[in-house]
Length: 213
Image (cartoon, rainbow, N blue to C red; front, side, top):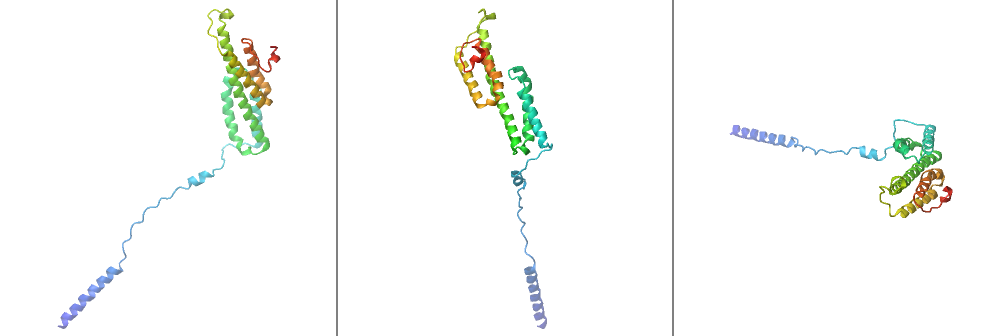
């Protein structure tokens, strides 16, 4: 009887110890969900400063702007072949100037000079467009007169030549009013073009008296 009681007590002790061991064992941990971090490049790119590899001093930038303006302004804009050869190189040089002038664009002298260069190129494009149209009209008038003006093998005439001439004259006056500082270049291209067309077709414009019409 004593042995059975002792065995029962030992069994109860073992059962209690096993329950304590199970209770004291750590609970299994669940794997944490992976966290994805957003790259900080987007925040840094919003405030990206001006960065360039080649550095130009302020005097160098002004010198390049002056040289570019002098070269473009001194060229004969009425020579279409000269423009065909040179305008692509001028546009490439203007892209470079636009890049290197940025650090000094806030200065009054540099900003004014760069604005003058931009206006110069705008006037060049406008004058080139109008003069090309005048040249085409003059060529059509020549072809309509036939071989050496004899009427032989003559092509069709332009029916609305008066309207074309009036539009070119209006563009000439408008560009003169908007860009008075570039009057010599406007006269060199559009003014002379109107005079050439006037020799082939009779029409009137504001400064025709300068060419004895």
